Length: 333
Image (tube, rainbow, N blue to C red; front, side, top):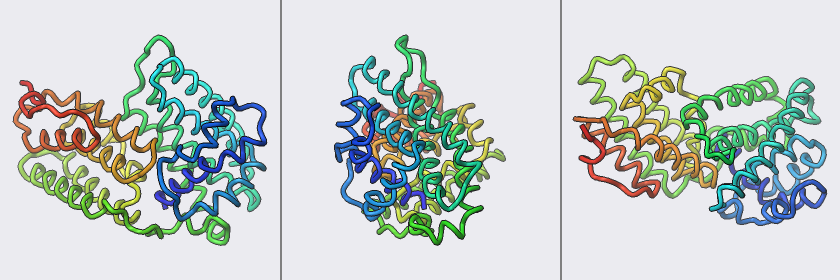
């Protein structure tokens, strides 16, 4: 399901030029950017026809969906800017559109009907993407620190819960509606070229965590082993197209462990970032994945005697294109 939703999100952005023609408020830069199909950085996908027809129609009827499309386009503009001041301006614009979308979506959630169900679902997914992406960019001119990736991902769990509630409550209507194919599990998308390789990497990580669990008396490791199994389940369900939804399967203890810099939890979180970077095929997933690895790998310099997990760190950095250092440089005692 999640892979298909992400494909649809890309399609919405590709076709948002149609939407901008009906708006007076977006800047010329934003209009030009949303009209540029390179925003998705991907080839055509299975759900483009839904975007061109149903989603465009829904956006013109429901401004909260239109606003969140423009918010995500603004974030993408920010991600491509070298000038921090210009990037800040685009993030500020994105937050304005996102806040406006949230206000409209909140009202719509209390009045769900067959007329607005599709728009509510689409807007909820895009709001989730914005919520997980925009905080990772500076939002002030004084170089204030951005929140940690752990805190940002933890805050997104509530969005997953809301989307799941709508889907479960209105399942019959969804299955009869124009978005029915998007919510199928397993994914109807064809397997990705990198799926087999990623599954091998997931299973190797799982094996390492199992070995660590057997050698140490650590109750947390049991839940981390289960979380690593879920990586494989999510990969198989999405046909290797998306690892995004895995973060909704972990509990608060996992986030607390990463914040405490528990070595195995950090390694697992970084590995998920790598899989996002490799499989999700969208600019925002690659940005989130690389940011996770970049941030957390800088905090692993105290991992003395953890050669197996240090290897995971080195692998993660290599996968997302960050220059590696030696094992001795990572594990400075």
